[in-house]
Image 1 (spheres, rainbow, N blue to C red):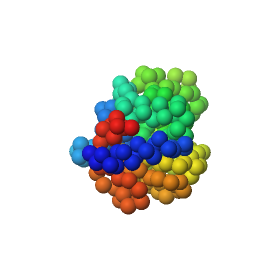
Image 2: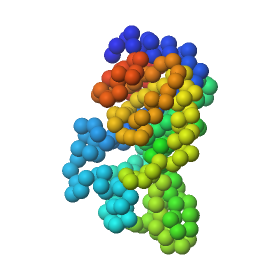
Image 3: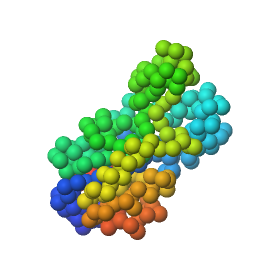
Image 4: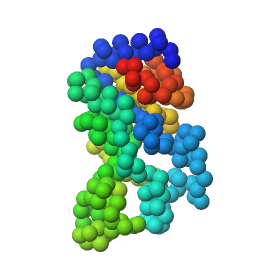
Length: 240
């Protein structure tokens, strides 16, 4: 690990007053949740149909049985716990240094670690609602509703509050995330390949002093960062 880069990042963190952390699937891999595009990720596994087809809105409507089987077995990790990255970010927020977390993850681990101001661009597995009557179910309740979850109140289908392919991002969440990024003085981008749009474009809204990018492999946007570390996020966060 480049000690000079770690020293510089540590200095930026110490001086910053409004850190925003922008993270992807790589933030949660050390909690046992596989990413999508890594060597062992979801998109490198063999399925009868491509994952991006199965987790699309049209597939959800047409083939709910297959959709929910995939969703339950490949996208839900109810026993996962926050790792050093989640815990460090929560501590920074308590200390008044971090103003927001912007995440592409749906696992809710940032909140479980104690973070309060979290913009979940792609939703959360912990929120589920009946499409007919709007009844709310947390993850534990959702898991008890059957293979294709049926509302206990009206019998309607219960849909997870996650953004599927073909669905738009939530406008208020996007606006909040963009506002936080624009106001930040340090933007830490980590655990993301920066290939999923529109989320990957949000880093261009940053107007502050420094961008630090931490990812195990190069990204198409490495050149916009003031500091790049191709390291495991947990290894870096332990040093901060």
